[in-house]
Length: 414
Ligand SMILES: [Zn+2]
Image (cartoon, rainbow, N blue to C red; front, top):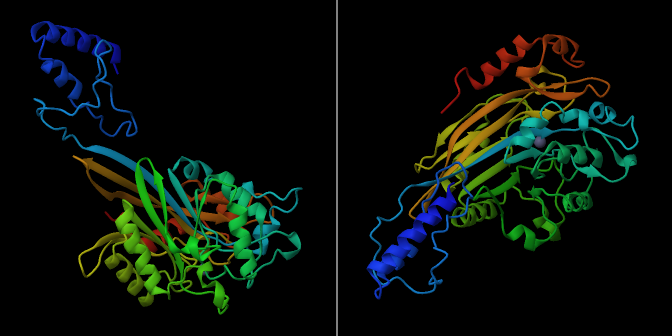
């Protein structure tokens, strides 16, 4: 930016105008009110270039008397945001045992090979399927999971920004541990979705602003595995059966955010195709205005697509991202995905349109082991040597790639 040259030109021009049109001040005024050029996408947050000549007195409070001779600025301003999301962080016994050999317990190894992608994204989202326990004595396996808080530390260090907690295991250790999870995250720079420690907090859905784009986000679960919320604390977890609240949240976000993103915990476990019930919910949520849906719970991958509701509303829908980390013992359950979504906001003459301009699914695989080699890999980085040593499901990279394409198709949807 040649700001000094621009200023010098402005000064010279201003002085010339003063000489030629002394007494009127008209030309100088036009200089002052000429709109600054706006840069396109490269630096969306760049401040406007100052056009005020240093020798002129400030006249910014004076309203313009005539229209400028320049046409109004119509070049669109483009802002982009890259969001990534992963599936269920499901901490079985083999997973928590992989990091309890040190003092303090440490789980950084789990995410070390995907950390770069997570950190590089503007927003990275994870479903924390299992609830934290403060005391290591309460750490537990299926069916009532209790997860060491050190898992949360590793999740945070990996670079996740948005933590989903509305899922069917959230009440496994009682309502107090829901509040304990909120407490745990409270001193970290993350947005926690789906759980609330007050009716007030539950009343207004969250909006996260990044790169000038306001993303409204919500997270709902289909159930609690037969457990239930205390009658006086129904606000604590967002539940899909409370359709009125879900619809009100979407309406609020449609009115107050640039885009509405719904993270829905639902579907049929171990089915690689979306259930009828999940499809009905997707239809309702897209029809209500949500623009991006990222779902999980089946513990296996399901397809993703650009979906059009019956009323014509469109959204990008990921039906299930599968497991992120687990110790489940089938190939499909070790194969997960990282949704990678580019969101673009285009502003022209003060009017903005925000849309998903690109979306992809990066295949992931959980490498299971009895030690700190337990880790999530991008399938493109996984080797046949590692695949053969995958403790729970020895396999090959070809088999994993074939299965990935069988489930989500050969072509990337557009
Ligand atoms: Zn689940």
